Length: 536
Image (cartoon, rainbow, N blue to C red; front, side):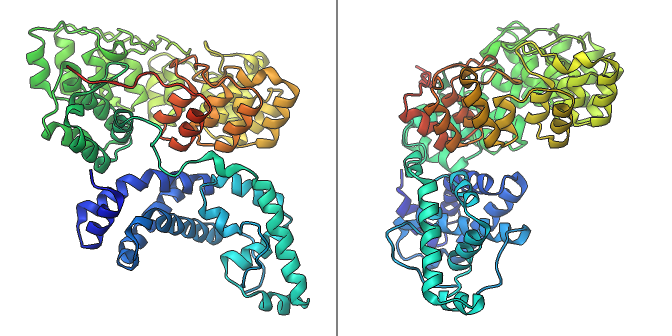
């Protein structure tokens, strides 16, 4: 496998595939840093695109290929700052300056370090507006301190003292956060784990590089029995991007019964039915109909039903093919399943029904389709949709709905918070709902979280929400390393499994692509089930 310097040199020489490898390798980092800075996926995507565009245009200027990582991180930080300033960053009417050597890390040095941006931003929030504006002018706008002094009408020594005090305060607030993140993403995990992660998150260059080094992993299976091809095909059901699964097929990956169903390869599936029963269960206790439904392969789903497939067969989490059709927005397959005996009123293992699933996807068309199948609107549907008017009417009819929970403990407030409906959560709180750590994390309300943990120490390990997460799970899947560290200091059980998927916080962090959080948990004793068994 080429090292980073070799890949950069190839990209500098005009090798498009080499540059795509850099995109695959650093795309996840760029998006994670941009999202933690901006808190918005769409704006984070904009930053990633602009950062790689700038990198492509200026790559020839990089004199030390081995320094690409640090160089690119500076570009990402600059693009984040550009987007932030364009939106609403408060600034002073100044222009920017030289640094005072005082032993404290400068804000720009902190931002370019491995400290999570959530930690840095929280540190900046602890400063006074005047201190924030001053540091912004000096370190982001490059305004000479002499100009700042002239603008403010104060001696230069006064400005230098204020910069010194602000820097010391920021460094103190950031504290020991440098230890939270290591230099090399994924280095704590085996090649097999990184391979499955790369396949799930669409990093084709990394998949190709890992398989070039270890070809035997092409037909690897993870601890849950999913082949690499099936895993990649299912990732494509979420992303609608099949580059990885298509490449794996072209590379000679074995096409089994379930991966063929997930890919919609009808001829292969029907041929396999000569030696498999139509309702054979495989990984996650899913049948071929489950996998075909996820991919929206209606012709294959029809053929499987014609062969006697049961649309009400449940998988490991109590999901039928009908549930999966709603969850993945496959309206045509849903209509087919309902017309062939699919039960619209069956409830999943976590207590959600079809209407809840449709609402959690924000799919109004699917909500209407499911309602026509005989399901009634309830407080959980209103919470998931963020429909305050409906919630108000339902609570006026029956106030007790506010305290209802789904099977593994999710409340209406938690459902609304998970969906990011701030107005709905404020409404439910005004009607008497009780804030909890899971909701506080989803709402990014650190102050409320800290207060809750101080008043109710036992809540640090309490399961809640749609998936029965603990607060540590919730912080980990959001990549909130600062909160992960705080929860561990509060005694959170690092290897406590969630109720839905039976995974530890580290396993969930890996699934959601939060590698830095996973590494932090790993260093503190987080466990990972054996991720891959090579097929003999």
